[in-house]
Every structure is written in structure tokens, then in C-alpha cells.
Amino acid sequence: MTPEILDHSLPLGPVPRAGSTRIFQHLFGAADCWLAAEMLRQWQKPLLVLLPNPRDLEEWQREWAFFAPDLDTPLIFPDRETLPYDRLAPPADATATRLATLAALPNWRGLCLAPMAAALQRLPPRSFLDQHAFVLAVGDALPPERFRQRLIDAGYRNVSEVSEPGELAWRGGIIDLFPSGSPLPYRIELFDTEVESIRAFDPETQRTLEKVSKVSLLPAREIPVDTDALHEFRSQFRARFSGDPQRSEVYRAASRGQVPQGAEHYLPLFFNETSQLLTHFPADGIIFMPPGLANASQQIRHDWQERHEERDWQILSINQKPDRKCGTSDEEKPQSRSYGVRVD
Image 1 (cartoon, one colour):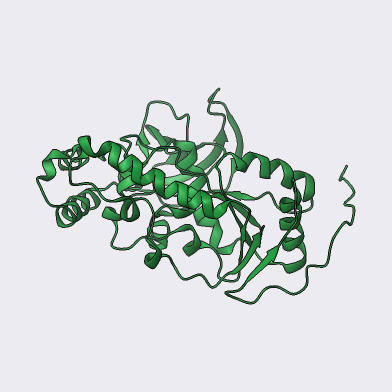
Image 2 (image 1 turned 90 degrees about the horizontal axis):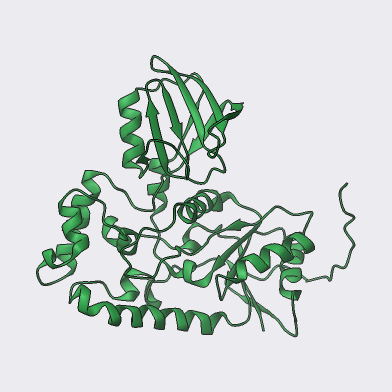
């Protein structure tokens, strides 16, 4: 039974002009989430809510389900869940959610939630997503070795049994694949070089569930991992930093043809240009800024700088400064044509 939606709406007036900011004051508790829902209903514009703390994500999701059961479930753009300069890859589920959100965001007309730390991070350019995203359908021709290499170049990992996003298992004419951003993995059966069937399956029991006619594939990592990409990384590393690059473990790993652990922190070295979350957000969208955002942004940059100084004894003098590696300096921020709403 669909719950009845009580009309507690408050006329918000016209949509703010592009580039302007409208301020709402004296809101308490969950009122900012209620206000966001009203904006989406009345203004019919995509809404990006920047949150001071990653822990706010769960609270906003619960409140959104209460205030906006008639609206779409929000997109989530989480943090990478690793500290800057850590030699650890982000969790596969976090990366999958981030990539799925980036892929959907340009055409999204609902709510997107993102911690401020995630919004400040450098991201791959749109061309990277377009290059590695494709749709596989029943009846498609699928040269096995070429397809396998395409997946590996997109960051998928060969495993014996698929259990999390970004994994691939190949057994004769059967391919188990867990696409990035998908809730379930898929079992692809080939007849010679043609896709005969595609079935979703349970990663815990490995039992097939239902047939589908097609599946959408995204890259499994935010960086390219093919040989050319590693060569570009090493070239950019030498060009950016003075000193002996062999003193850096990430450079030595790339020299061995391996993707360095924590390579996402060095994302700008893999591309000629990068992006940020706002780059992917629709130009007519509204940026919603709750209280505490300015202090959170300042604290994030302070933490990045402190982390850099703490790691200096390990990374010596050849690592990127936080403004170039993790976020952007003020003059590098993308010019947004979006509307702004601030809650004080």
C-alpha cells in the first residue's frame, strides 16, 4: 500500500538565477532534508547536496525516505574510504558506487548526496567513462580474448570465483562478471563467439537467478591500468618531481608493469586533464550547502596537508602536494553554472 503524501509544502518562490545563491535560515533538525525535497518537487531541478561529514550520508538517506517517498532514491557519491597517501586501493564497493553515480549524473534529475571530501577529489575525465562503458546484449558477437583484455584494461581482476564488483572469472565458454555499479554479478554463456544467454546470479550461493537481455558495463577503477597508462604515469611522475623516482614505491611498481597500491591518490598523473564532481553535474542543477560546509572544507584541506607532512619521511621530496593530488586550488575549481542554496 502506497503511503499517503500529506501536503506540508511551503511555496519557495522562483528558481534562483544561474550563478546566484539563495539563503534559508532558522531550520532545525531534519528540516534541511525536508527543504531539499520541496526544492526538488517545486523547482524540478537536479539537486546536489554537499555534506560536511561522510557519516551524514546515512542520516540523509533515512530522512529522505521519510520526507520524499514519492521521489526517486538519491544517487550516492561516497568518499574513497582511504586516507591520502595510503598505499591501499579503495574498497571495491565504494569505487563501484562512485563510478555508477558519475555515469548517471549528467542525465540525473533527482537528488545526489556527496560528502565534501569526495566533492573536492580529482576524478577521471568524462572521456574515460565513455571509453570504457559499453552494453553487452544477447546475440552480440564477442571475441573472447579481445573481450577479456578489454575488461582487464578497464580494471577488472581475474579471480577463481566472483564475489564483489570489479571481478571476472572465465571458465571455457562461461564468463562470470561482476560489473562495477551493479547490485548483482552476471553469468554470460557463449556459443562459439556469440553471447547465447546472460543470467544474474547470487554471489554467495553462485546460483543463477534470472535471465536478462543485456548488461551495462563500467570501468572497475577510476584510473586506467593498461600498459600505455602505466607508461604515461611514469612519464608524468618524472616530469612533475625532482629527485630519483626509484625512491618511490608507487613508481617502482609501475616500472614493473604493476598498478601501484593506492594509485587513485595519484589520479592526475594518469590523465592529461581531470574532473571534479561538479564537472559531471547538470549545468541547470542546484547545489545545496548545509550548515558547517565551509568549516568542513577547511578542515579537510588541513587534514590533507597534515597527512602530507606526516608521510614526508616515507615519500621523501617527490610526492604531490595535497592541492594538486587530492583536490584543487581555488583558481582550479571548475566554473559552475548551477544555482546555489545555502542553509544557515
